Image (cartoon, rainbow, N blue to C red; front, side, top):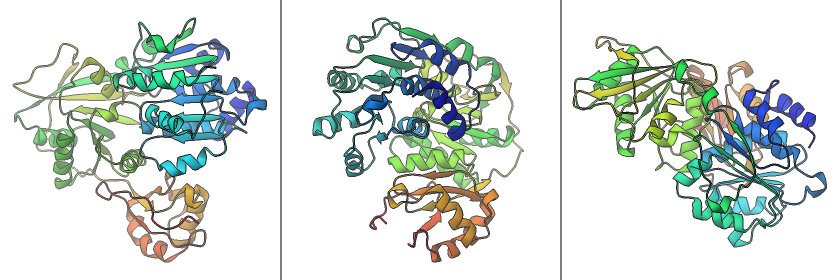
Length: 453
């Protein structure tokens, strides 16, 4: 693809009319024939950056062959990358593969060979070993968040995958931390480095607050803190899944609207949790460190460390959820008197909670859960028309729409969601009735059992 064609697609499909410094540097410095390493925090637009250089190197006459593979460590990151690349890869097929996705759907999507595959390491190797995809023609490989891939133990899987790609002509690595040496199997050789870690650091835009808890159990202190800080999207980090569940239950019992996110949730419930946090169906997300990186979470104002982070890396990535790009952010560290700050944590000042403060922390929106999605031929346009024709919800009131393979999530005003359900469930979309309900953290997302339309 030509550079101007790619930039025009980015403008038209993604609404981005001007590239940032990282994207400009990657586009100009990592030529289509060069290996490259991009050091950049999450949220700085690196997906668009490497997408441009990958698309520039695609060959139109080889569009029926698998030319490029992007590997990322998490399902969520794979989907986010695909959502960026697919609309701008004009004329090329992009396929997404990841664990928790329906294997038969993925196998069917590989019948016609894609030009680009975006995948988690294990799922890509599984399809290769089953013979569903041939990796020998791959010319370009992107290893996104390579440091995280190594941290999660994917080194052997990636080693096996690279052996199946003997004709690679270039490799691009991205990392949120500096790699002083590369594993031998990557064989980077001569490469161009674009390092944005220093210039993109949000430290100067972040205020670190120390918050004291009189009780060893910090739940009450957390509640008072939430009542005392300015409103805005807030992520509460804890070190363990059971602690996350306990915090979430306490907030719910206290009448505080919150969501929950950790690795024991099914993939579709993790997708739902992030979608509902982003679309303002709840203002607070309680999460393990799984939510500290690799997620497209926008406009987070506050980060709260309910538990002290276990490492400098965990601390950095948690804090990186706020003060993104050019915005200000606040980080609060809850401490019992018996706890002391680790050496890698420095606070700016102490925050004193107002123990008398009371306020409602409620959701701006509600999320409608449609039990049908892309595989049932449901599009965003279908949903907008369906809602406006069968409820009192206007087009301007419809928020973010996320359409997945077998379900969709739609943000609508909180006060209009419940009254609309009776009419919506009685109506048809694309000639069929589809079950619609109001999503909540407790409602499990399940794949529909009805046949595809």
